[in-house]
Amino acid sequence: MPTYIVLLGPPGAGKGTQAKIISEKLGLPHISSGDIFRENLKNQTELGKLARGYIDRGELVPDDVTIGMIRERLSRPDCKPGALLDGFPRTTTQAEALEEMLREFNGRVSAVPYIKVPEKVLIERLTGRWTCRAEGHIFHETFNPPAKPGVCDFDGSDLYQREDDKAETVVHRIRVYMEQTAPLIDYYREHGTLLELDGTLPIDQVTDDLLEGLEGRIAA
Ligand code: AMP
Image (cartoon, rainbow, N blue to C red; front, side, top):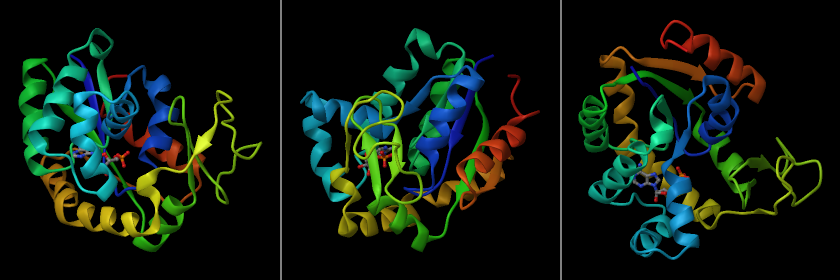
């Protein structure tokens, strides 16, 4: 049976950072809805054109578009063993659609690590964040700087500041999270899959807690 893990938490909690570290260890592809949208923006696809306004304003792309995009991604052969989902689902409608599509793939969500970080810390993290252009590796100018400014430690590509990491948009994205995504904490708690983690700890510590928490919940 395939293994699906959903990383939950506000923007800036460290979902992408942790996903990049644990995806290989777990043997599961890292599926980031934000990365897929950004790839489509870059390539100016129809999906990218449709999503741009929402992303720039820090709002959610409509559910039907997002669900269709994820369904297509999860149907690809590399997702046969399952997936590590980062940034999806973000609404209750998306969570219910995910359950339904995973039933088709003979799977279900096995664990939902929820990375908790207070709002003040999120703003500092997002406004100082630098993202790698090639693969989306994530750095922070103060808390996790690259060895060489402006250059990704992992693949040498250049680092840029995301348009939606500007202070005004960041505040709005956090509000959107509180209103539309935070209800998923209770949703998954009721399903018995939630795993709460302190996301203010150092990156390595969060990784250890995450892997320890997943032990026994997934057959990896
Ligand atoms: P992220 O990289 O996860 O912060 O996502 C960047 C932006 O992509 C979000 O602010 C949304 O505009 C859009 N996005 C990513 N994932 C979703 C989703 N599951 N539902 C709707 N919009 C999304």
